[in-house]
Image 1 (cartoon, rainbow, N blue to C red):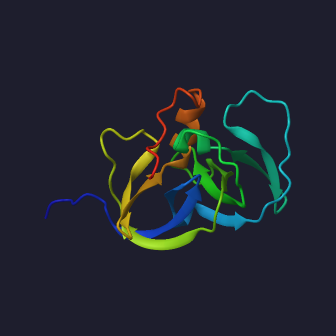
Image 2: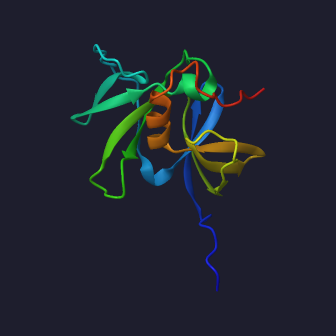
Amino acid sequence: MSAAPNHARKSWVLLHIGNRRFALPAESVIELAPPVRLHNFPHTSKLIAGVIVRRGRIVPVYDVAPILCGRESSVHRFYLIADRAFGASPEASEASAIPVNGECELANGEMQPRDENAPPYFAGTLAIENENIGVLDLQMLVTSAASNSPGAANPAEARP
């Protein structure tokens, strides 16, 4: 029996950033936090909007809307907090937050391989409700996009 590609059906959290929907693996999502005070501080990190304090932990907030949508999102209703893994070890991760502008949904589906022309921070796509939704690799999004300026990045195509 040959090994089939790993396209197992699993749970995904669908989130809204700008006017687009994206997905993250449900097992990486810690919580959807209400709007809390965003603490700003002097720094040179391009994507960090600031930090929030959640459950006694300092959580960096990454504003990824300019990378994914080509412009900043003016509406941030919640913070989606997810584990961002740095390697194979479970200890090599941190909680990271991204502002989202709508409620998140839980969906089940089978991830399809990413388009060869897609930016490297897309792990694949989901076909849900007649829409192809990009599955984000949060670690790749933050690290690859941080090395480029938001204007020079390849933003995701805007939905009509």
